[in-house]
Length: 339
Ligand code: HEM
Image (spheres, protein in one colour):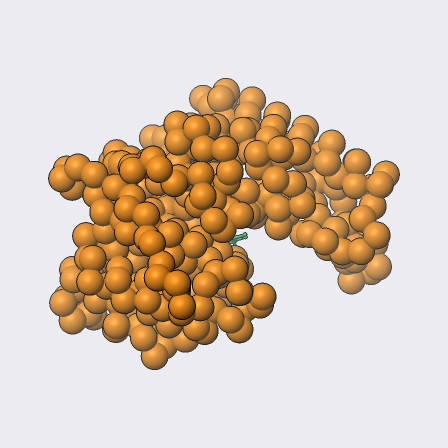
């Protein structure tokens, strides 16, 4: 796997390790970069060093037991049919044990000031002033990791794929990121220097929504567009269908990032729901977009990217919308003229 071959993680923002390679399976590099980012935000641990055990567990969980199985659709509640899924329970137990150990260690040796999400959760208080139980802290951390790693990695993959197929847009994005390099980003305001790059990410999320299905269980009877909804049944909303609907979008299947150019927060409006909508809207949307912009800016400032082979990449939906295969990208090193 490319993620094991490279010696310096892309999350550091440089992609130096890809120099001289000529081609790379970037899907693996994006996995590693996003896992590293989320582990650092949660626990101040780096995926390639002190957080390696957690990173390995998370990666193996997301590659295997996390994916939907037939019985997930047959189960009526979260605890039904779990006896069919030994793998998921075993890996879940190992993950919980690792996070419990981290919580215990942090309680013994707290950071002098708040540095990550774990510090915040340990400092948080319920309305009655009591601290959060360890189990809740562990569950919150686990949700963040599961929700925040593969989703962003897939976004980076599809954005790079679309830009590889559209060299003119790629050149325009490159001009933007060379004018304001990723190393100069000191805060979220600096990301305003990259309006086209941000629009590329929105357009990617429209065409390849990395959370392809949103599901809800009906609490009471309802009627939606003439269809009876029975209490307890599962209702699924498909961003994929809504985002490509010809009654909602002009040229729905064409990659046109400009359609988002003057829209700073377009998500959550009725025709564009890559992060969901309403009270359960994604709380990591800002984090994901900032992270994806920085990673992509670092890559495009260093390389011209194209596909190494012609075989089209077909999206495949599971928990996230992934590629049917992980293609190699051709990487051509950019040589910048000295000022
Ligand atoms: C491109 C990246 C991402 C996409 C497309 C995405 C998409 C979504 C969607 C569609 C939902 C709503 C699910 C529902 O309504 O049932 C959601 C919820 C959530 N996301 Fe994200 N997400 C992304 C990145 C992240 C990141 C980086 C984090 C955290 C670090 C995160 C944490 C969460 C959490 C905790 C929830 C549950 C919120 C709640 O139920 O109150 N997500 N995400």
